[in-house]
Image (cartoon, rainbow, N blue to C red; front, side):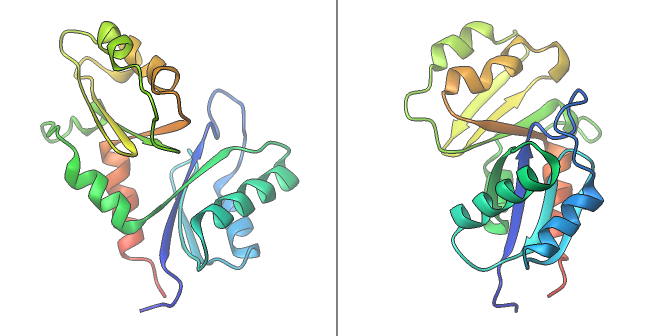
Length: 183
Protein backbone atom coordinates (compact mmCIF):
# COMPACT_ATOMS: atom_id res chain seq x y z
CA UNK A 1 0.00 0.00 0.00
CA UNK A 2 1.27 3.44 -0.89
CA UNK A 3 1.96 5.99 1.85
CA UNK A 4 0.16 8.45 -0.43
CA UNK A 5 -3.59 7.83 -0.35
CA UNK A 6 -5.77 7.78 -3.43
CA UNK A 7 -7.39 11.16 -4.09
CA UNK A 8 -10.18 12.04 -6.48
CA UNK A 9 -10.43 15.57 -7.86
CA UNK A 10 -13.72 16.75 -9.31
CA UNK A 11 -13.42 20.11 -11.04
CA UNK A 12 -16.44 22.37 -11.30
CA UNK A 13 -17.19 24.06 -14.63
CA UNK A 14 -14.35 22.63 -16.71
CA UNK A 15 -14.82 22.13 -20.47
CA UNK A 16 -18.49 23.15 -20.27
CA UNK A 17 -19.97 25.35 -22.96
CA UNK A 18 -16.59 26.42 -24.32
CA UNK A 19 -15.50 27.89 -20.98
CA UNK A 20 -12.85 26.68 -18.60
CA UNK A 21 -10.94 24.77 -21.26
CA UNK A 22 -8.54 22.29 -19.71
CA UNK A 23 -7.32 19.38 -21.85
CA UNK A 24 -7.06 16.27 -19.72
CA UNK A 25 -3.48 15.63 -20.89
CA UNK A 26 -2.61 19.06 -19.45
CA UNK A 27 -4.47 18.22 -16.24
CA UNK A 28 -2.53 14.96 -15.82
CA UNK A 29 0.76 16.77 -16.48
CA UNK A 30 -0.17 19.49 -14.00
CA UNK A 31 -0.92 16.90 -11.29
CA UNK A 32 2.34 15.09 -11.99
CA UNK A 33 4.17 18.44 -11.86
CA UNK A 34 2.76 19.03 -8.38
CA UNK A 35 4.34 15.74 -7.35
CA UNK A 36 1.13 13.73 -7.21
CA UNK A 37 1.57 10.10 -8.15
CA UNK A 38 0.13 8.23 -11.11
CA UNK A 39 -2.49 10.78 -12.20
CA UNK A 40 -5.23 9.50 -14.48
CA UNK A 41 -8.31 11.26 -15.81
CA UNK A 42 -11.79 10.19 -16.77
CA UNK A 43 -13.60 11.89 -19.68
CA UNK A 44 -13.24 15.61 -20.39
CA UNK A 45 -15.17 17.13 -17.49
CA UNK A 46 -12.34 17.43 -15.00
CA UNK A 47 -12.19 14.14 -13.13
CA UNK A 48 -8.83 12.88 -11.94
CA UNK A 49 -7.52 10.16 -9.66
CA UNK A 50 -4.02 10.29 -8.23
CA UNK A 51 -2.00 9.65 -5.09
CA UNK A 52 -1.06 12.48 -2.74
CA UNK A 53 -0.26 12.90 0.91
CA UNK A 54 -1.31 15.93 2.91
CA UNK A 55 -4.45 17.76 3.93
CA UNK A 56 -7.22 17.72 1.32
CA UNK A 57 -7.69 21.50 1.51
CA UNK A 58 -4.02 22.12 0.71
CA UNK A 59 -4.09 19.72 -2.23
CA UNK A 60 -7.29 21.28 -3.64
CA UNK A 61 -5.82 24.77 -3.26
CA UNK A 62 -2.58 23.77 -4.98
CA UNK A 63 -4.48 22.26 -7.91
CA UNK A 64 -6.67 25.37 -8.30
CA UNK A 65 -3.66 27.70 -8.20
CA UNK A 66 -1.74 25.59 -10.72
CA UNK A 67 -4.67 25.59 -13.16
CA UNK A 68 -5.02 29.36 -12.76
CA UNK A 69 -1.31 29.86 -13.44
CA UNK A 70 -1.24 27.60 -16.50
CA UNK A 71 -4.70 28.12 -18.03
CA UNK A 72 -5.92 31.50 -16.78
CA UNK A 73 -8.98 30.39 -14.81
CA UNK A 74 -9.44 28.82 -11.41
CA UNK A 75 -12.09 26.14 -11.11
CA UNK A 76 -13.50 25.05 -7.80
CA UNK A 77 -11.69 21.81 -6.92
CA UNK A 78 -13.61 19.28 -4.86
CA UNK A 79 -11.31 16.64 -3.45
CA UNK A 80 -12.63 13.33 -2.22
CA UNK A 81 -11.07 10.12 -0.98
CA UNK A 82 -11.89 6.79 -2.53
CA UNK A 83 -13.75 5.90 0.69
CA UNK A 84 -15.90 9.03 0.35
CA UNK A 85 -16.79 8.18 -3.26
CA UNK A 86 -17.62 4.60 -2.30
CA UNK A 87 -19.78 5.84 0.59
CA UNK A 88 -21.61 8.27 -1.73
CA UNK A 89 -22.37 5.41 -4.12
CA UNK A 90 -23.47 3.10 -1.32
CA UNK A 91 -25.79 5.79 0.08
CA UNK A 92 -27.42 6.52 -3.29
CA UNK A 93 -31.13 5.89 -2.71
CA UNK A 94 -31.90 5.49 -6.42
CA UNK A 95 -31.38 2.30 -8.41
CA UNK A 96 -32.00 3.04 -12.09
CA UNK A 97 -32.45 0.24 -14.57
CA UNK A 98 -29.30 -0.88 -16.39
CA UNK A 99 -28.54 1.63 -19.11
CA UNK A 100 -30.39 4.45 -17.31
CA UNK A 101 -27.56 5.42 -14.94
CA UNK A 102 -27.25 8.83 -16.60
CA UNK A 103 -30.65 9.82 -15.18
CA UNK A 104 -29.26 9.84 -11.63
CA UNK A 105 -26.96 12.71 -10.68
CA UNK A 106 -24.74 12.96 -7.62
CA UNK A 107 -23.96 16.57 -6.70
CA UNK A 108 -20.79 16.71 -4.64
CA UNK A 109 -21.03 19.66 -2.26
CA UNK A 110 -18.20 21.73 -0.81
CA UNK A 111 -18.84 22.46 2.01
CA UNK A 112 -21.98 20.66 3.15
CA UNK A 113 -24.98 23.01 3.02
CA UNK A 114 -25.62 24.99 6.19
CA UNK A 115 -29.22 26.04 5.56
CA UNK A 116 -30.48 24.45 2.34
CA UNK A 117 -33.78 25.69 0.94
CA UNK A 118 -35.29 22.27 0.35
CA UNK A 119 -38.78 23.75 -0.05
CA UNK A 120 -37.61 25.77 -3.07
CA UNK A 121 -36.10 22.63 -4.61
CA UNK A 122 -39.28 20.68 -3.89
CA UNK A 123 -41.31 23.37 -5.69
CA UNK A 124 -39.17 22.83 -8.82
CA UNK A 125 -39.31 19.03 -8.70
CA UNK A 126 -41.09 17.39 -11.63
CA UNK A 127 -43.60 14.64 -10.87
CA UNK A 128 -41.18 11.87 -11.86
CA UNK A 129 -38.14 13.33 -10.05
CA UNK A 130 -36.84 12.23 -6.68
CA UNK A 131 -34.23 13.91 -4.48
CA UNK A 132 -32.23 13.16 -1.35
CA UNK A 133 -29.61 15.09 0.61
CA UNK A 134 -27.01 13.20 2.64
CA UNK A 135 -24.17 15.26 4.09
CA UNK A 136 -21.86 16.34 1.26
CA UNK A 137 -23.93 14.72 -1.52
CA UNK A 138 -27.25 15.72 -3.09
CA UNK A 139 -28.91 13.00 -5.18
CA UNK A 140 -31.30 13.67 -8.06
CA UNK A 141 -33.16 11.06 -10.05
CA UNK A 142 -34.62 12.60 -13.22
CA UNK A 143 -36.01 9.78 -15.40
CA UNK A 144 -37.20 12.25 -18.07
CA UNK A 145 -33.65 13.57 -18.40
CA UNK A 146 -31.37 15.92 -16.50
CA UNK A 147 -31.43 18.42 -19.37
CA UNK A 148 -35.18 18.84 -18.94
CA UNK A 149 -35.04 19.22 -15.17
CA UNK A 150 -35.74 22.70 -13.77
CA UNK A 151 -34.57 21.43 -10.40
CA UNK A 152 -31.15 20.37 -11.73
CA UNK A 153 -30.30 23.93 -12.77
CA UNK A 154 -31.21 25.31 -9.33
CA UNK A 155 -29.53 22.82 -7.00
CA UNK A 156 -26.46 24.88 -6.17
CA UNK A 157 -28.40 28.12 -5.64
CA UNK A 158 -30.95 26.56 -3.28
CA UNK A 159 -28.44 24.45 -1.36
CA UNK A 160 -26.28 27.54 -0.88
CA UNK A 161 -22.95 25.84 -1.48
CA UNK A 162 -20.69 25.11 -4.45
CA UNK A 163 -21.48 21.82 -6.14
CA UNK A 164 -20.38 19.75 -9.08
CA UNK A 165 -22.56 17.01 -10.52
CA UNK A 166 -21.65 13.68 -12.05
CA UNK A 167 -24.04 11.03 -13.28
CA UNK A 168 -24.14 7.66 -11.57
CA UNK A 169 -22.36 5.95 -14.45
CA UNK A 170 -19.46 8.43 -14.30
CA UNK A 171 -19.12 8.20 -10.51
CA UNK A 172 -18.92 4.41 -10.77
CA UNK A 173 -16.30 4.68 -13.53
CA UNK A 174 -14.23 7.17 -11.49
CA UNK A 175 -14.42 4.85 -8.48
CA UNK A 176 -13.33 1.90 -10.61
CA UNK A 177 -10.41 3.89 -12.01
CA UNK A 178 -9.36 4.91 -8.50
CA UNK A 179 -9.52 1.31 -7.29
CA UNK A 180 -7.01 0.25 -9.93
CA UNK A 181 -4.61 3.16 -9.47
CA UNK A 182 -1.05 1.84 -9.40
CA UNK A 183 1.20 2.64 -6.46
